Figure 1 (cartoon, rainbow, N blue to C red):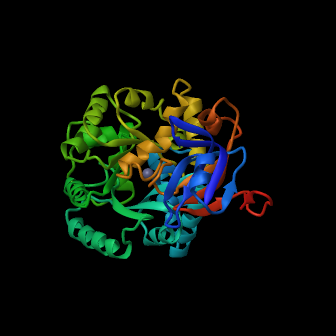
Figure 2 (tube, protein in one colour):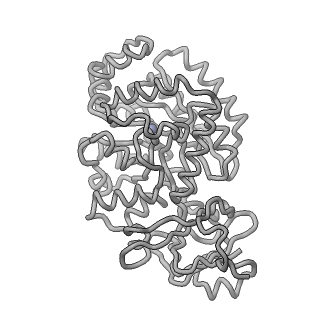
Figure 3 (spheres, rainbow, N blue to C red):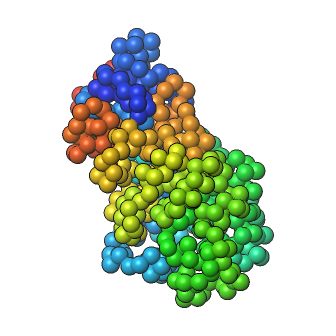
Length: 417
Ligand SMILES: [Zn+2]
């Protein structure tokens, strides 16, 4: 099969006009280049996307697809810890089927928004089951939460069981997600670090999300302490580490090369320098960040310091949509000083590198997975600007060589053989 279009974006800085991608039956890319060359060297059905833009599928580096059905249930934008409490209260009434359907709906929204890979924080088996059955490329990171040292043995058993059920393959990877430094004890954080490193897997942690987190990690006081008492979290003897959240997890050795530090809303210059000295990746969730009315995100400071930054949608409990294209457009409107190519890299190549999949996803070239999207161009000059410009829209999503979403499906004359 050959996909052809007016523009082919192979990487954020490499665009070909009248380009094409030849796709092998095993779901990898045989060639990506000028249409004439690709057509001469490869046979098969040609799918012509006409004036659209072919682009690497986006990488959603932080999602909770299991929470998709929470859309519009929390509308009064409460402070973070009230919001968290409301989420927990809603979930108490959910059945396994509710989680399954919610996650499937989340997959559909991701596909329609251009994501071909999603990093899911799994705290429910049905969510993982739904994702396993779906065609999207997924990293299932099993969530660990708690301060109780007895949890260590329980977590060991659970992780092994899940690894047996959710076996690694091209479309499915597993990893671990200690929830946050305020909700996971030191022993468990170290356990998660060792498990991830042992298997070279992805580790994700919510970090530097709120001033309350910084206070709790430093001194053990404040709104988080109150919140834990309110929701019946088992009492712990945490009295503070006297350091910032970033330094705390860094001192525990968590800033590895496949570590995702999610949110990073509140960072000192020292935190950023520490992150730049590590191989960890920051994950910015643009519209979720806006939902909670945090001050301007330190994205430009992170990029200036050389910290890799990927993007995530977070969940519909704190976001209006799950489209990665819309997240990038939002970044563009918030940070007009950033180059469009830089913004596209946040949604493609940086995420791929963090997941240990550089050259395999987030890029269109020979040997990579055929994770390709087609986008109706918006306003602007040049392919990348038109990709992110007003009015652009994802029209097709192919993951691993399979078309999983096509808004043109059923239209005539789009395929020529
Ligand atoms: Zn999250």
